[in-house]
Image (cartoon, rainbow, N blue to C red; front, side, top):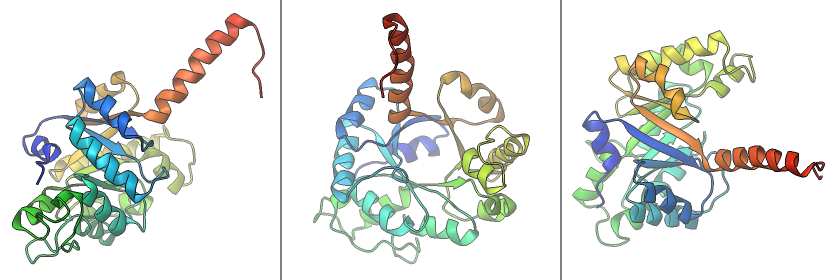
Length: 266
């Protein structure tokens, strides 16, 4: 079974750096890996079109690039997508739309083996993570599932209302505050920087640290990390493939249009 480097970094108290992709093109994973600067890639499956073959190919790419893979899973899909992604070689799951302790418990169970000690929902599989036929159901398989990093989104009003109990759920490793969803859930759509949203973010981070969990923050530029570092955050996921492309096309297209003196077409 492949070592979970992401888990090893968390256990050692080391900082981690990831980035997001919505593309299923494995070469993008290899390009990130070639930098030697990132620890993992989050495939934001909540937003992206993909099939099960894509998950297998991304799993192969993570291994080639020496990166861990995280999958972001939308509500109602925790079980199926977590199981298939882990089976493809992903070593972390990020479950969105957590609203209750029951949701949090389901997120953890979706990543663990169905054994008395782990109390998960994974049975014996014949997938990439076990070499298809070599280690399915073995002690190494159970141990590898125990090492899967489980992260949850703190992004709904109900989650903040019962945050202490939710973050007491055994098996959660990492948290991520979602300002866009939270703002919408409290009737402030689009107001990500509203003082109430900012207070909720601080509460999410401080409560996570108090519980011994690892809060992660999404940023677009390194300069945005400073205030979070002061709060004790050590884990960041920076920008996304689609965001990087859009920003480049917008900024450089505008510059060249100004040189050309022509009007935008379409």
